Structure formats: C-alpha cells, structure tokens
Length: 258
Length: 263
Image (cartoon, rainbow over all chains, first blue to last red; front, top):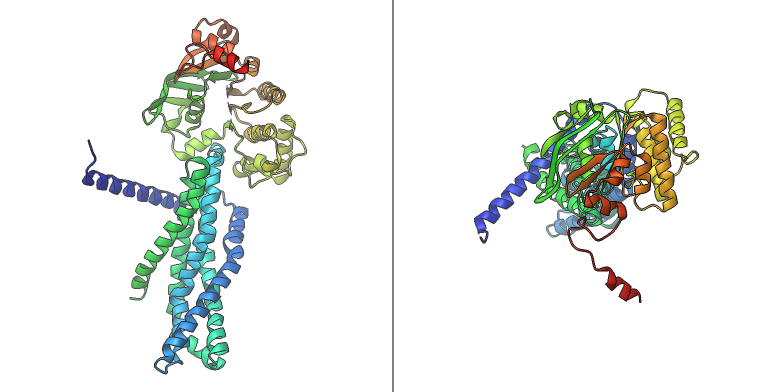
C-alpha cells in the first residue's frame, strides 16, 4: 500500500517525539548524575580548559568583530538624524543583552559542541563507551557531567568576557574612528544598562551552555554507522544547538524582560 | 550452580534473528570457547552476558543474578566481577596505557596511588608489556593493544573473563602469544572464562569445552576431544576449514574456476 500523506506525517511526528524523548531522558540522567560519586576533579578541570580557556581567542575575536560592525552601523544610522550620541548607549544595550550571549553561544556551539559530538561519536563507534559500561562506569556520569558543568560555568564567564571585549570594539569605532569623547563613551555605554541586564545575559549564557553540552554529548552518544556517523554528528550538533540557542533566546528574552 | 547461565536466549535485530534459543552453562573455573562463523551471534552473546544488550526472550544469569532484571547500580556491581576484552581492544585513546589499566582501580577501589601503580605494573607484566606505561594506544601494535585490553580487564581481579575474538587480525605468531597469555591468565587467576575465537589451534589449547554457534543456534557444546569427533557436518566442515558444505548459506564459487584462473 502506498503510504498516504497522513501516514508519513504521523511517522514524522512519532519520530520527532521519540527523538525529543530520548534527548529529554539523557538530559535528565545527566542532571541527576551531577550529584553522584565518584567526583572526577581531573576530568572536570580538563573540560574547563577545553571549554573555557581554549575558547577565549575565538570569543575575543568574534566579539570584537561583531561589536565593531554594530558600532559602524549605529554610527551611520544615528548620523542620519543627528543623534550620534545615542550610538554608544544602544551599543551597550545590544552588546550586553543580545550580542555577547548569542554570539558566544553560537561560536561555542561550533567550537566545543562539535568537538564533544565528534569525541563521543568516535568513542561510540570504537566501543570505548561500551568499555566504560563494562568497567562499571556510567558513561553519562563520566562523559556528560564534566562537559555539562564546564559549559554551565564557562559559557557565562566567556559571555562576560565578550561584554568586556564588546565595550572595546565599540570604543575603537565610536571613539577611534567617529571621534566621540572617550569619557562620554565610557559613561554612555552603561547608561541604559542595569544590573538586571547583566543577570539576563548570564542567565541566557547558562541556558546556552546547557544546550551546547547536552546536544553535543547527545549527538555523539547516539552516533551510529562508523566514519560516516562520526562525520555527521558534529554537523548535526552545531545545527541543532544553534537552532535551539536562537529559539530559546527569543523565549528567554520575553520571559526575563517581563 | 553455573557461574554463567544462558537460558533460551533469543535476540533479533529487526527481521534478522541473531540468536535463537541458545542455552549455555559455564561452571566455576571453566573455560568455554565459542566458535562460529562471522555474523553467527557470538559477539551478541557476550554483549547479552555483559548487559550491553537486552534479550528479546530468555535470560542470562551471572552468579544467579538475572542480568536484564538488575537496576543500573546492581548491574555495575556485577560488571565489576567481569573483565571484558574487546575485539579491537577499545582502549581509551586519550589516555596512556597506565591510565587505561588504572581506570577501573581508580574509580572503584579506595586505594593509594602507589597501590594503583603496583597493580598496574603487575597486570602489565602478566601480559608481557612491562615498560609501556607511558605509551598512548596510537603508539601500540594490534597485538599490544589486545594485551593492554587484557591487563585493563584483569586489573579489578574479576571472577569472569570474556574475550571477544582476541586474535582476529593478528599474525600467526602473535595469535599464539595471545593464546598463551589467555592460558596463563586462566591458570594464574583461576577465572571462569568465555572466549570467542576463529583460531582453532588456540581454541583447543584453552578450552575445557567448545560450543559452536550456527545460524543463531548452539549446535554443540562439549569437551574438545568430543567436539573433534562430533559427526555433525557443520562441525566437521568448520574444523576442516572447507568452503564446501552446509556451513555457508550462499554456495561458494566452484574450486575448478579458481584453478583455471590461476593457470
């Protein structure tokens, strides 16, 4: 019998529910495993290094580039109606509330989420994850938890770095090129900001960190099919986590700004 | 009571039935060798014993505990008493040989680092790899990787050892070395073991009993001397290593064509 449209749609919905359910179960197991023993400090420190310290250059470079581009656009836009002074205020608002957390999240989903998917995917197809099971070690506890914790700590910290670098990116354009006063820029950048904005940025970064680690580990853990599967896992991880970062950004913004 | 009791075990992947009503019992200290063609379900049998797969029907009991009915914590407790040696070793490639062998010791035993070091050196010397502690798996040959895998499997002093095709892909000399190591481990540790292999020479050396899996079913499980004279045509064909016979589902190419081609 030729499958009808309804059959195909039903199969698609079931598959999507199955996929989401699988992710939710693994994510739940990862959070539950955080408090289980033994605590592997060395593994966690390695992940802090990998997720955090090694990501500083890419976060600094992208943050400065994006904040500079945004400053150029703002300076040009506000010049149209002689309101150049507002550029630094809007730059501050945009960097803190949106650019820093989202750019950091997207860059890290590409840098560390894909690395996690590739590493766990390779471990899966070379039976290293089965070896962990056979050595009476829960792979969720051993592999997911350090990556999740490292991402939950380091993505907010790197977002703070991104805000700081974003300030100097705007400074380079608005003070260095557009000729605004450095003193005025320094004051205006923070004028529209409150402590709540930093809190919102860090909350967003925390959620993005969870998404990056959980999606990266999940895609790697579920890798099948040898080299081809290992090749697809990072791509799929980056696409999925980037999408979820952007969608969750909308809902977090609506929720946290209320 | 058998240490490992496989009862009416069946497992299928989609329409392909891999194991069908397999029954096997392994007594304490016994060495069982499981033979069979590629895809006959040997590895699936081991994975069911380890709890890496769940049976469709039947069960596997290790020391009286039915594996599929255990929760994760209980399963991990049982697994600490089983050492598994994978076909391609499955060493953790981000760790050194020392860290690989020490992995289980550090996670499950509350012992000092000096004691870990002593145990790792003891295990590596049992498999003839003393002095390789600092090497990474990428720097090891296939035979060395298998032996590090053995050392990792015996580090926690398991009561049961499972070997999944330990000699596949190795040259005949290294195959003999691996066979001798398995024999040494059997005599020194007195463990219960199941070895899956295609190598008949080492199979007859290490086995107390030999089982043959054929199309998902266990068609023989007996002492090596009885197995050798078992008149079952599949067993005799397997022992001869001949392509002609009931062993293959698809008929092999006729021999004369090969002769013509070489002439």
